[in-house]
Image (cartoon, rainbow, N blue to C red):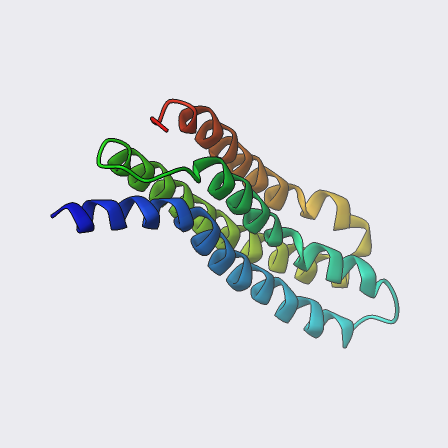
Length: 148
């Protein structure tokens, strides 16, 4: 039983990075597909499409910082806390990156036909980013209470 509990602690440490990166890959992929399609339909302004499609990559950065914050010797006392905090943070980053990728794709699709809506069309993606930042900050705060 002890090796299983300790393994769960290690899983919790790595989950924010792994799941955040998976979400970023999916989200950037969604945005990138929309950006590639939009480039075929417009004559200029390709950079804004590429920039917006990269927005979901920030969840990987948040995952790296949370992973480094959780990184400590894993014991029977701290393993459950590491697992729960890390896994839930990772799932939240995964889902937010995927949702942000969809919002970015919608923004790209809207602004390819009507360039003047570009700024306002990325607002939903920015709001989703805000929720990822909430998860990030509170994970850091809670990580301080897990025994070292």
